[in-house]
Image 1 (cartoon, rainbow, N blue to C red):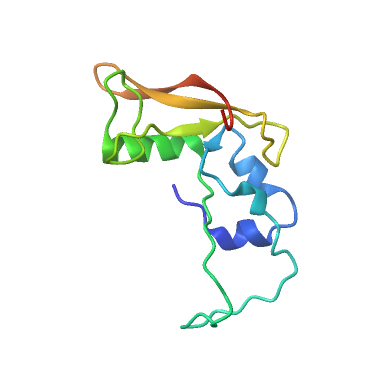
Image 2: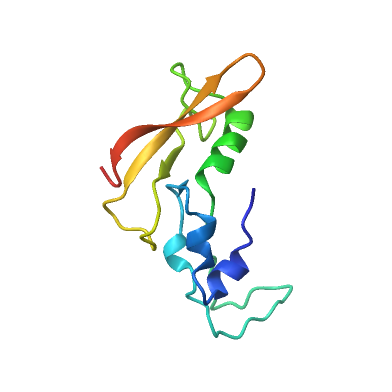
Length: 130
C-alpha cells in the first residue's frame, strides 16, 4: 500500500491520523501532514533551482511489513527485514494521539507462519529514539 503524499501534505481534516491509526513505519514523516494546506501547487517538468527535494514517507505499519517481508524476508527469529543489509523493520504505535510524539513506543514485526498463511505480530522494541 502506498499513500500519495499530496493529499497528506495538503489535508485539512486529520485524515492521515486515521489512515495510520493502527501504526506506521518508524521512518514516517507524518509530522508534515497538513503543512502545505492552502499553498499554491504547480506541476512542472523541471524543478526550480532554489527548490530542493524533501523526503516523504507515509506508510501504514502492517501493509509496509507485509511488503518488506515479501521483498527482503526475515531475520533468524522471524523478524521482518527492511533492507538487504539485514536491518529490521520497525513501526510506531499510534492511536488517538496524533501527530507522533517522541515517547511513542516502537515495535518490530514478527512473521508468524501457519500451514497456509502468514500473520504479523508486534514485538516491542522500546521507546522511539532509544
